[in-house]
Amino acid sequence: MTNKTLINGEWRDGAGAEFSSIDPSTGKEIWKGASATKADVTDAVSAARAAFTKWALTPLAERIAVMERYRDLMKRDADDLAKLISRETGKPYWETKTEAAAVAGKIDISIKSYHERTGVKETPGATTAMLRHKPHGVMAVLGPYNFPAHLANGHMVPAIIAGNTVVFKPSEQTPGPGAFIVERMVEAGVPAGVVNMVQGARETGEALTRADVNGVLFTGGAKTGLAIHKMFADRLDVILALELGGNNPLIWWDTDDVNAAAFAVVQSAFLTSGQRCTCARRLIVPEGPKGDAAIDALVKITDRLIIDQPFADPQPFMGPVISANIAEGLERAFDRLTDDDGEAIRNLSVRDEGSAFVTPGIVDVTRSGTVPDEEHFGPLLKVWRVADFDAAIERANATKFGLSAGILTDDKAKWEKFLALSRAGIVNWNRQTTGAAGSAPFGGIGASGNHRPAAYYAADYCAYPVASMEGDALLPLADDQVGVKN
Image (cartoon, rainbow, N blue to C red; front, side, top):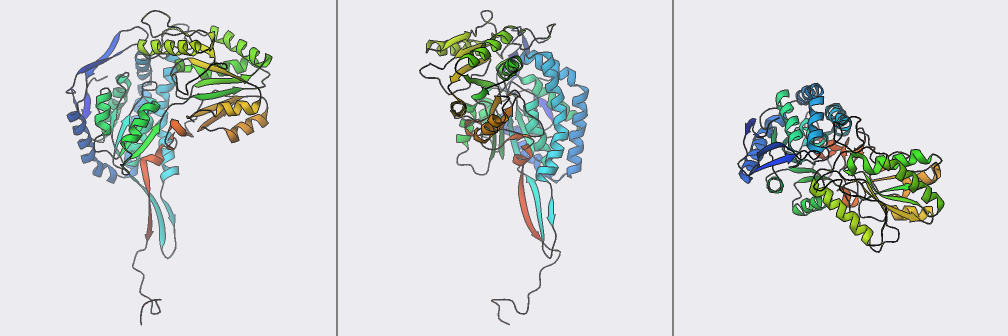
């Protein structure tokens, strides 16, 4: 795993300050490298610009063949990638193995998506109508820390297949997995300049988004996404694909199997230590005995969750959050909710001083004064109790976000009503809110994105449609052409 930048096929040291990444489960440094400066970023974008023409003219079959070689390398090295992700994020090894597999799996999905979403279409006739798709140019890809390989890979692979060139900046908290996948792309034969990588923190990211790029593909927090959106308000020439977070609701209403429903809540709220953008942040239950029984079952299962280091035996359900600072911030957020008349059902607390391990927190905010409509990116679940099902839907939609939503119920009619009235890009029934298919679009509305969903629909923002009217020869001028004298 390199600690260098990749510019025009050359691995070189960044010219900026050194930074490092820390294993959140141990506090030990596991990666150190130099940041890319503004000049480094300019060089990377220039290299991508210079490589674009040749890559766009490369036949699609050849571009796909390069990505298929990359797929095979990622299958070969999947276990090494999984272990690296676990060390850098603290996620359990069982979970990072699924992420590593998804990296390889994305290639075949992206090839199929490209053909289905952006393929060539011909309508023959005296004049042939053609629909083709063309690449935008240089795409800036900004990766997140929670899925440092899979989510960045999900932008880069469709972009490369479509004929774009890429400058990729991994999250400064997880630089290792990003470098790992780029190394395999180079090994697979991606030409110099087609993929470039710059490491660094906010300054590097700002330099990249302000550079001469044709698109910005970003997965991350809503505040950063909004700042990027504002940055390009007067740049109609730059395509933005923003996959942001959510204050996601989960309704629990009339289920016979209370324990199964409780575990679905746990998977929704606490999987990946609550660090998935689709995690449930708000649980909505009925007032009275049914709601009390649901919460009791939820607490009992939450108490049984194993929280440990990523390679522990037995394997944990969840590991630490990404850093001790984030853990401390989550603890403060929980305290603010309880200080504002929220009732602590299960305390969220940092396990040890200076640790990134936190216990999952559950707080009843039904009688709170002001509950901010914000995403707490960690294992913090807010509970609302409502009088009836209409109030449950109203509460679910009481957010500026719209990424994921779910309902746990045995009543199909309630599911159909919720599906019709809910406002989110991912809406699940009797499944966790964190469940999503790679063969489907992934994204949200409102503050959760800009109507450019990723996953299967990434092909849509990596190429633009071109309509053509075509003929092998010019149409002759008719003797009786309207408006033309004989």
